[in-house]
Image (cartoon, rainbow, N blue to C red; front, side, top):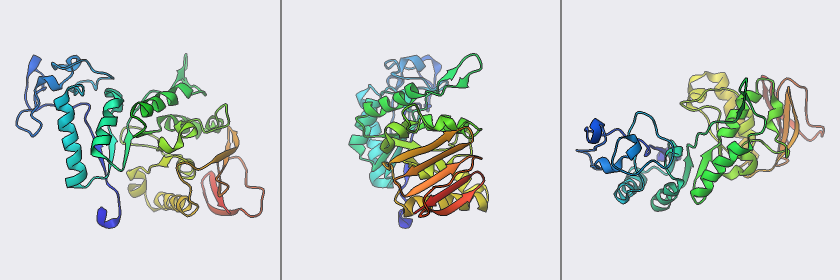
Length: 305
């Protein structure tokens, strides 16, 4: 990957680890015969070990690692440094970040020094009873993600699950959801775009629409492998065009956005006064003649100057 100028990101799964042998209570909470030969003290007491209680949520059915133990952190830091220096990973994704205190992410990042890191802090959006329809206001949801970023000492970004949750409903004829009460994007990217890693789908979620939105907007957009490589040339080529526009027009994580329309069948925005875009069935185009249509497809169009 380095030969092709691609930065490699390692998936750091340090919240839950199945042991190699049975220990306390008959659970697989011992790690005999491996370089990190931990005993039951490395596992939280609420998941079958002899360590402290979990700080966050348990990953059910799997022993959860107790990061309050100094020997655990020492070994994890050694492993992270090995991934960075010996294997050559430059970036880290911290899996199931809700399971342990974000102060430990701060320590791990500061010690192993990845170029970039992102936390998988997946929290449930807010839904209203009795039909559990997605609330328009998701401020408390994105605030929880921002709180996690803050508690890492701001050394890690986070996946923008707020944008993900809103976008997958908005594209069903509810595009008004894409402008919050202050006129900003309603996800983490509306409050802290330089720390918001936007995405459409990952290995445990669903949704296939929205690349026009995340690839023209601030934040740090990601492409799902399946969409890019396995869904055929048409889908692949459309994504490539959008990525090219982003790069050529220098749209970045801190780009300024002005939302021009946000109603049921139309969303339109101007980004850095370099790119205009629209999604939805509604008819819309920039009023100035200096705007040039760059690409368009099913219910979307993008212009640049």
